[in-house]
Amino acid sequence: MKEMRNLLEKLSNAHGISGYEGDISALVRDELKSYVDEVRVDSLGNLIAAKKGSRPSVMLAAHMDEIGLMVKCVEDSGFIRFAKVGGWFDQTLLNQRVILHAEKGPLIGVIGSKPPHRMEEEERKKVVKADDMFIDVGASSKKDAEKLGIIPGVPITIDREFRPLANDLVTGKAFDNRAGLVMMIGALKRTKTKSTIYAVGTVQEEVGLKGAKTSAFELSPDVALAAEITIAGNHPGIEKKDSAIEIGKGPSLTVMDAAGRGIITPAPVLRWLEETAKRHEIPYQLDVSEGGTTDATAIQLTKAGIPSGTVSLPMRYAHSPVEVLSLKDLDRCAELIARALETVGGYFTR
Image 1: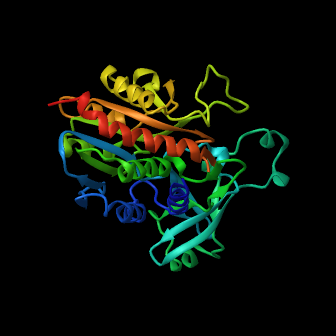
Image 2: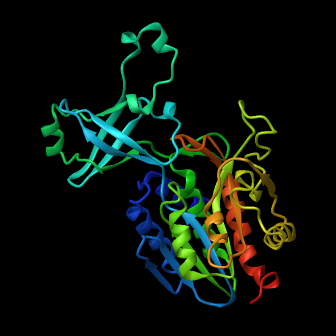
Image 3: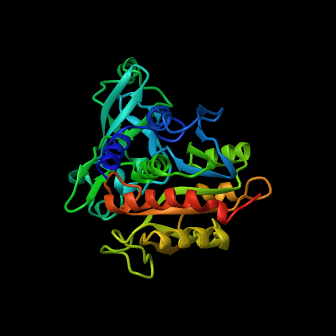
């Protein structure tokens, strides 16, 4: 479990918003290259690691991108306006420290807004919107900012690092979905499957499941699994009816997400995962949600349809810089995927 913890820390502390996943891709390549027969990057940027074997072939997908921001314009005063990349709750952004990944090198900035001391009473009662925020890098003017390399299109990430909490919990940014990458890598390293495996670090999931669509179309696997996170409900503010999934109780298997607009997992896929978990005494949970979806949705709709499912890690505070997960759950997720790869031939043949 220590190896997985260290890898999660490395990937969480690295930076790569949607469309700018290159640094993450390089880290994943280094982890996988000794365990596969081929590693390549496709035209969209997906990292594809292929372990050759027999049918059925299995695609494992874990997206490499994190939600972030992008420079929209620089005002004459040197302050920076930004666009959101992916699904942010605006309140989360205010007063965060950020990194602007300019071509000349990274720059530290802070997200600011009109201070409460200068707000009218009614203003203080309202949530500050991202449109009313700006980034301060210390530039004295637009020209000064441009000298630093700050121009429209510069990607921005949150400046936050991995830290341990009590018991086996840890916190950090971008666990969605660097945790999924750790699950995928861990599973591939420990499995003894004889099937063909495509481990794919997908791009641009947070902005439309884009990499999953193109890579699945090319690979055309017999079955696919997305390694992801899901919303844990065992904390204040979420009732069991909103999410029955709990941290510390093992992997979550998606039955349905996005109220059916996402994936409704085919019965053979769900049976494969459940029976594998029971056989190897891995605790698991079943997830029915009305919220978001995963790469599995895009994969299942590729070509004539690919049977797909999702193995998810329960996580708190998703899409924030302080996401929290259990390392024990992380290890169990990798174990379930590894064992499922070894039993896939008994469920899917072509």
